[in-house]
Length: 430
Image (cartoon, rainbow, N blue to C red; front, side, top):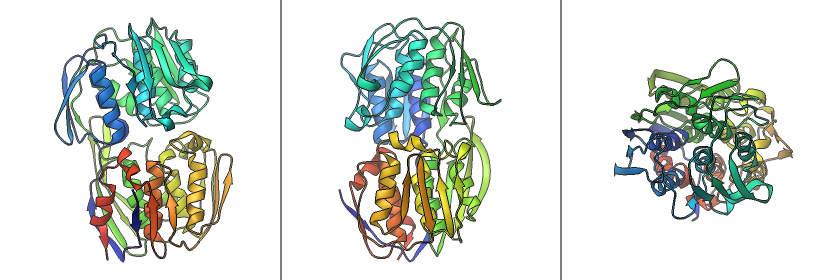
């Protein structure tokens, strides 16, 4: 699908971003292995999260959706999953595959996980290696690529130092640790999103975190308690509007009910360091997660350095950061972000290519990008490569460029934000 955008005269209004994708995945999986029923409100019905639901159903978990944004789950219990009759199709969702590997490694049956071409090209050795140290039996294609075959077995706790900061890998190890004899300890090289730890703690798991880069989890002796919750709005879905508003000459937006978990708010910290006018209001908590309203206005931006702990706290938003700094005064360096190269696309390469098509000068490094601004963007024909984050970044770029911009494979936004194009129309004033 093609979509054409141009710069709106102004941006005004209030939006509620869709539910957090990471939390929606976890609510479906964790409640699926809990003992009892739970209701999840504001569940994200994106392509990725629907892939998780289909996999859970094939594993014997009962669920229904009485309306588009509500999920009712009947948990099977920690030992109640059933051997699937066919391969579990994770579609394009790395979260689905990596989290399910952690659960299925301990189940007393054979399971096979596969996905689309993009997912089958992504590295899974980083999750296979620690699970095999715990005793898991996993077979993969060359270089640890999917499809993955697992024969569940008894696991033992380990102490594992993660070579690369990854919330998905951490979560897989934690989930396996719920079934493993003894204690499992995960040491992170840097902070990553802690939705898994927060939710499992609310569900009664013996898990300790928040004191340095170490997570400790002990084997479940009883059952996980089901957790009914309302999913906060996704900061990754709010991020396109944050960048669009701060870089547009006439904008004021309110983003309601956004999750502001400090492991996810790197994009806010980066934009504020660049001089953006962003205010956090009405702070409260939903199901252990901090939530707030965000008010963002037009402003002048300056260059910055993005590195260290900022990178894992903003990893999905870094293409949008690269766009913002094209319009900022001075030089910006984004480094230590080599993880971007193994996402749904090589996001270092696709971000640089997309911005160059709009006339930007962007230097690509092995682990990031260098951008000197301010630059003037000109509308062009651009390509998302089927990557939802790239499609949204390019749409925002087109709204900040002169002339018209046409985005190829614009439908890929549905992976995480099914209402993206509608919401763009809602806030645009022509």
